[in-house]
Amino acid sequence: MAEVPIVKPKDINLQTHRFILRPLTEDDAGDLYKNVKEYDIARWLVNLPYPYPDDGAIKYIKQCQELMKKGESYELAIQLKSTEEVIGVMAFVRVDKKHKNAELGYWTAKKYWSQGIATEAGMRILEFGFDVLNLERIYSKCFCENTASKRVMEKLGMAYEGKSRHEVFKENRFIDLFYYAIIREDWETGR
Ligand SMILES: CC(C)(COP(=O)(O)OP(=O)(O)OC[C@H]1O[C@@H](n2cnc3c(N)ncnc32)[C@H](O)[C@@H]1OP(=O)(O)O)[C@@H](O)C(=O)NCCC(=O)NCCS
Image: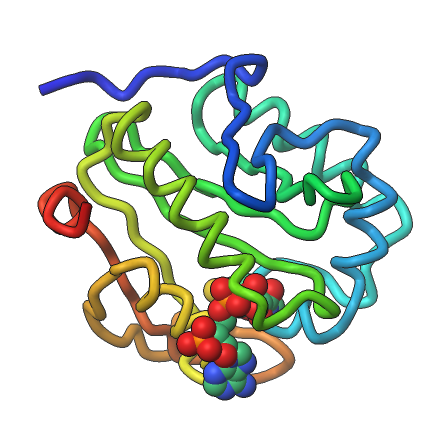
C-alpha cells in the first residue's frame, strides 16, 4: 500500500477548465478577505469568525503554509484563469497519513455561487487526493441546513454516511452535521 507523501507546495498547480488550484500566498490576502468576510460564508463554516478580523486572511494564509509544509493540510486557492481573482478555497483541511484519509472543506465567493465552481474544483482536488496523495478515503461534513454544500458533495460522488447530532456549538445553538465520503473504490468506479 503506497504511503501518503508530503507534496511540496511548489509542485502543486492543479488545472481545471476555468481555474488553477494552487497554494495560497500572502498576495491572496486581499481577495480572500474581500470574499470570506461575508456573513453568508461565515454562517456555514464551523470556525470562521464573524465579523472577520482585518488581519484574519494573512494569519490564515501563514498557518496554511506551515501546515502544508508538513503535509497536514492542503488549502488551495481557487484562482480564476480569466481574471486571476482568487474566488474561493478548496482544501484538504486535515490529512491523516497513517489512516490515509483527509477531510475536504471549501467555500466560494457569493457572487459566483451556483455556477459549478465548487464542483469543478472539488473534482480536481479529489483526483489529487487519490492519485497523488494516495488517499483511501476523503470525507466531508456540512450543517444539515446547508443544501448547497450537501449538493456539492453529492455531485462529487460522495455517499451520505450519517448525521452527527449537536457536533457544533455556534451562534448560541447546537448544530447537527451530515457526513459524506468517497473511498478509492467509488472513485475508480466513477472514472
Ligand atoms: C457550498 C458552496 C461552496 C457551493 O459553491 P458553488 O460554487 O455554488 O457550488 P456548485 O455551483 O458547484 O454547486 C452548488 C449546488 O447547490 C445548489 N444550490 C445552491 N443553493 C441552493 C439552495 N439554497 N437550495 C438548494 N440547492 C442549492 C445549486 O443549484 C447547485 O446544484 P446544481 O448544480 O444541481 O444546480 C458555496 O455555496 C459556499 O461557499 N457556501 C458558504 C460556505 C460553505 O457552505 N462551505 C461548505 C461548508 S461544508
